[in-house]
Image 1 (cartoon, rainbow, N blue to C red):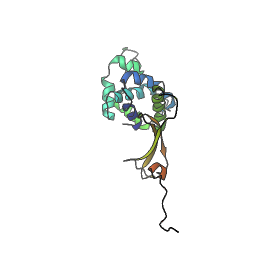
Image 2 (cartoon, rainbow, N blue to C red):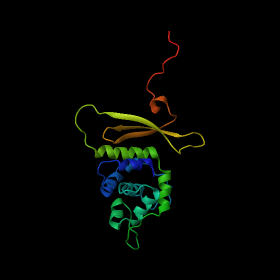
Image 3 (cartoon, rainbow, N blue to C red):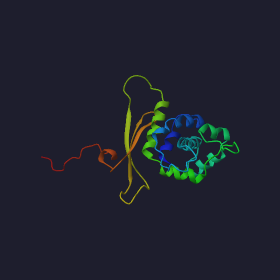
Image 4 (cartoon, rainbow, N blue to C red):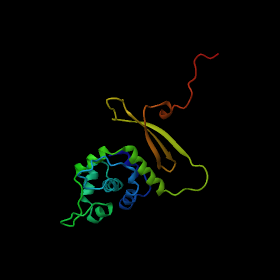
Length: 188
């Protein structure tokens, strides 16, 4: 499951369908990685359906695709899936279609869209300073031919909402949390 969708499960009192429909308005920030030919479903409908399934408790790609296949027609229509022109029924994607799309999506753009949605959803607590925590993590199992791992740097407020997340090139001392200066052994 994409890490960006996992942010949604940590939101307070998620309502799967209404939150997913509201999220679809923010998905214009995410570029569509699919070719122009053969697009049957809108990107916003596919990602909003995946988000709704995550909010409903899906924790894997298999569970996401099963939730979409089992969703009632009115819910699929609310998420933006088209009606079949001949039968008038709501057409849902094949599980492989959704899996291929979620693998190809730009994770940073999806993070920005979900972060914008969560920021717009929260109400400010009042005037004054806002505490923000910044932390970096190396993702396990993210090794590629050119890098030993992928490192993410995230900023989050103290209510648990992720404000921004960005992939950094190399794990630096700041991203690793080593803020204390090194002490020299040779003291004068």
